[in-house]
Image 1 (cartoon, rainbow, N blue to C red):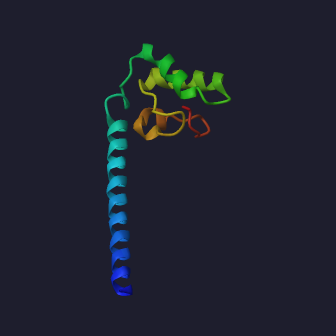
Image 2 (image 1 turned 60 degrees about the vertical axis):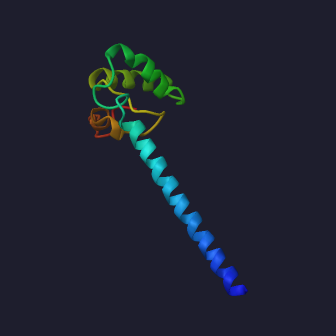
Length: 108
């Protein structure tokens, strides 16, 4: 009886592990699709869209004015603003790779 119960518990744990792996893969695919869709990426914006996209990007920082200044400068040059409030710069290579004279990131 105990052996049958142990086998059942192992089988349930394996099933849960398999389901969680499939769910994680599906979520990763959804995220990748969302980031790679035409909404983001090089040249995905028109210059008139930069102020609203930068307002979104800079909305949660305590340094709103400098963030807006540099974001709009970067957006005008790259025609791209990464998704989210921070990070995700790999979606916009121009935005990501533009550096200051000291080698730090120029775009927020």
